[in-house]
Length: 269
Image (cartoon, rainbow, N blue to C red):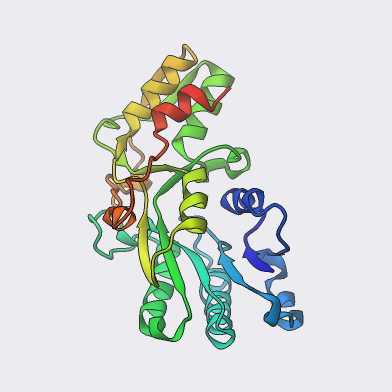
């Protein structure tokens, strides 16, 4: 039996697809309290995949963020320790803010992730196995419902299909992110054999927003409309992200990541 939180989210659904044939207990935010009070089959659990959270980087509801991202997460960590169950959980590259791999959260969501990463570091030796993965900029099939929180790959594609053009911030050639396909995320989380730790999970090869826009505009024969960078994002926008991925190649063949170019050319309508 596997416990999967956030099973109906963008990434959670991809885990469900890979876990076909296994007994999976799905836990969503709205039933997390009920799960805490009623679940007693811990002896049957072989793995916990904690992917659920309030993931909006613009959320300012501190009570809700603490309830789901901190309090529930600490509880399930404690259960993993007490029951000696391996646990793999989603952290976020947002903990780095505008720095290159130095903790500097720029919003409440990122702060909630930092809090739990520090908690894990303080209790690392108590787990049978704990792996935290700081997901970088995840994209892929199944983002349609995410709205403004969707990746630029999804947003640009939707815009150009609907209007024939996509909107791009001025200066986007200087905004580079480490985009990673959701299928690679799931594959690495489920199949790595690393010890307990907190790991970056991106490709280690950033791509500019301009490059993404160019790829999509070319594929769909659309236009790029440049718009001013909004004032409300100044100082709160990650202009560069790059995962430290040396850990995945230690004693292994290099992992073959899906590139944005390959995805746009081969995996989209």
